[in-house]
Image (cartoon, rainbow, N blue to C red; front, top):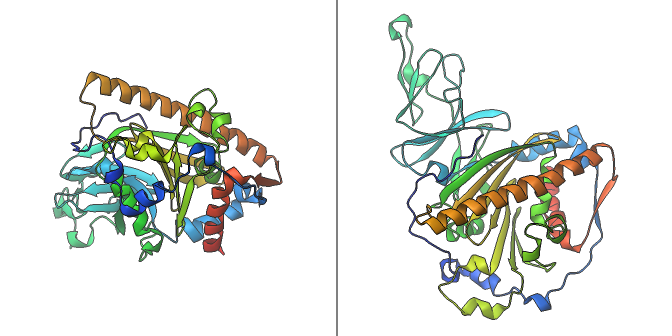
Length: 394
């Protein structure tokens, strides 16, 4: 997918202040210790090589997690305007995600009810009122209804009402669109209301989509995920890029079901800083990092928010859809420069450092080394998250 940069969207918010956040977030942020008071305890924890390399284990994850529960497929902000539609392939299923004139998000299988042809073949956002199959020109509304059939006189007793697009259960949760991929009655219990409230506080549902990029990685999805659950790698892997902005300090961690929230002060943080400028940008002081069940990563930065959907393709293949969100479009030359520089930096950091590390790690894991991965105190959130997934799988 090519980058989709600076998609127009209005937004009133310029920065996120402490007051913009919900009560729970504000309370927990005030619990973050000063950098000098930070402390981390060692742990003893391991996981077997097989959770990253076994096809059987991968299939269990697919059965017990990715097919058993709704999964994230797109951000609300990508199709913010009524009349928008975007195609997206998730876990091998071609999807159409639309927002019709009534403002409701609907998700369909991207397949014509005549012979199964894809209606939309690219992954760009389209503004249109209807969808026409390129094969035989059957036409559908964004609500999935079949509204036109070429040479309808050649079909005997064709009931258009029975030939609408196949719709899947979908829900917007904190600005993330979740879908039950197999069409069964969904269990929404993993979508915790606190995470929904947090994402709304951060402005994710109404954010501006500045940039969008897809990465195809040769690594297990959990190997890709792990860096976003720990701070151990930051000063080492990112030594030449962003490492000097962070310290090996513990963060305030909360688990909401199988959702992980990490709140940490940036380098030199003192709790008194929170009250020095009530109208200041909270992201200059605090980094929010989330792993939303099961494969959505959210990380805040000073000028933007990164959202990633980690979509498992096979035991050692993962598609990552990356979105850079800003409060609004760049309206000044300075803002354009800052956003462009930020986008280049973060794509290079994630793509050239985090994702590269995942791929070179997978090569060793595929060779059977190590037999067991060992985790330290700075990586405890990885273990916490795996415990939640393993409970669901067992």
